[in-house]
Length: 88
Image 1 (cartoon, rainbow, N blue to C red):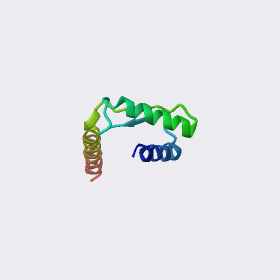
Image 2 (image 1 turned 90 degrees about the vertical axis):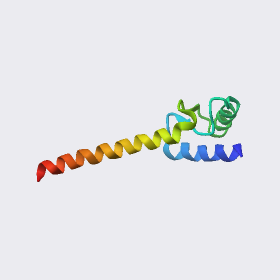
Image 3 (image 1 turned 120 degrees about the vertical axis):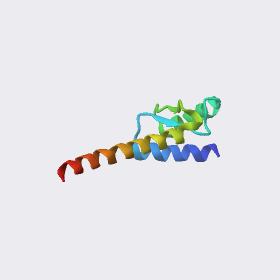
């Protein structure tokens, strides 16, 4: 299972070339061995020093991201409504 995760992460890395890769959810700071293993496998496969880190929000990563996107969506729509309202 871990090899599948590493292959998935390798594809993401090769596709978008990130400076950092931060994971959240089920992989929490308690799983230091898992993160260390992922880092070692990525280094061996990709020959780079990219570090996979654990999100500071842990298991709430998806919720936090969703709330951020909702806030951004609402704010953008309010700005558009205000701008269009000024034109009318």
